[in-house]
Length: 163
Image (cartoon, rainbow, N blue to C red; front, side, top):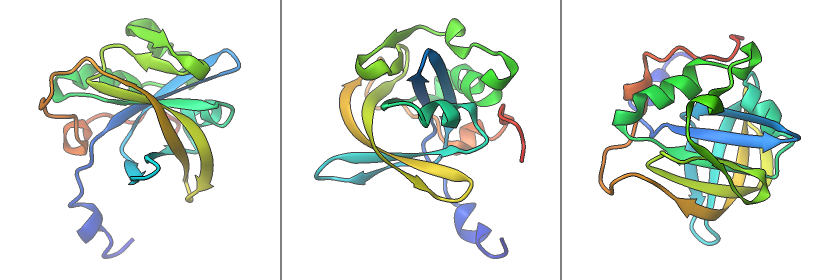
């Protein structure tokens, strides 16, 4: 895309880990496309790559959990961003996590998290947006601690298969 990078390259969004559970499967991935998208009612959208195993589990899920990490939690970002369940990696075996209502899986050590009911799904090209209605909140981080941003995660090679 010629010219578009002048804008896109200036962005440095918060990174988050999205987890999904359905039919006995659990998956999670590092996501850079996520945002609050409504104030009233409160809504949040996360965009999952169609190439990602988390997307395939999220297609069958009723809820997703969205987690903010701090810059000190780079290893957690590396686990969820640099490995894939497609290769048999059980990411959840390496972290403390809890099951929440509706089948969502929460990473207990995340700085902040919420569980949201999936309201709708929108095809955006190579990603699908999951519109979420946040229902449950929590976190283990100290307020004001810097969150992990795209610039902090640039060296993580994506774990999901390449296009």
